Image (tube, rainbow, N blue to C red; front, side, top):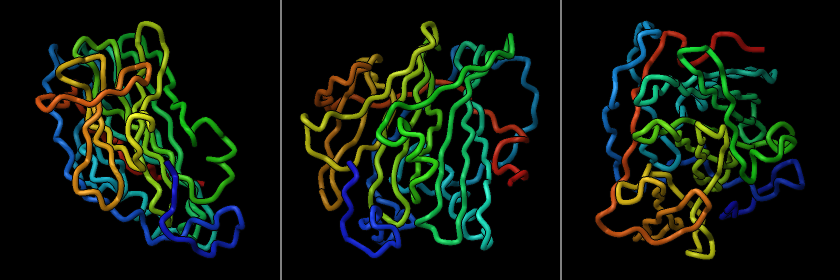
Amino acid sequence: MFKCLLTGCCPQPYLKLLIVVLVIAPIMIAPLQPIKAEPVSVAPPSINAATVPAVAQSDPLGSPYPIPWNWVMATHAGSSKRARLHYYRSPSLVSPDGVYAAYSRIQMQAQPELYRSRVSSVIFVENLQTGELQVVNASSPLADHSLVVTEVPGVISILTPVGWSKTSDRLLARQFEGLFSSSDASDLAVIWHRTQNRTSTVAPSQTAYNHDISILLGWSQVNPNQVLFRAGNLGDEQWSLWAVGGDGQTVAAIDVDQPIVFGKPLNQVWSGSQVAYR
């Protein structure tokens, strides 16, 4: 997945492939726009937080579910000569049955040099009736290795909620992974199974199609047990549409299939950039 286009001269020998121009430069692909269906039940009465205006976000891959890239770049631009930890909380995504709310907590260790900065994250799923919290992590090339995320400069590993299933039994999340100052970037899908408290991480199989970049689109309307991806390579005019099951089995999606997600986003006053940092 991670294959740089040009070599550079990073101070670290093991990061010799990191200097292609990026911040990460957005790859404008125009994927299918998912249908954001209305929840099938009312939002939980336990949430009465005021909303804040939504800020349009750019995204390195042009995803319909943008990561807070504006915040990442602004945080780096405002960093001093001293490394600091900054935090960001995403808006909550409430399940259609109103019982659960999922949100992401993102941590950025900002360095004066962008290629030395690091970003990691985790999703919390809160039971709005009991207050119980579940932690959702990805199982992926970067997220599996804590030393990579915490020690190797330039790593980006951002997990954000995308949508619930119609019956609220599964949460779909986007795992964006890449490297600063590099063209390396791609999506994986993380599925949290509510009744089993189990997660699975999937992406289009490389044996099905040799691609460098995958963009998560949402649940499949044709088969709700599958997720849709657009996959291809930089410079390709045509990108393929793939349907991936929870076991990773990958098949070509039919032309009429469209992505769909469920849930109600809530912008609480405590969403966004966290004032506290260290």
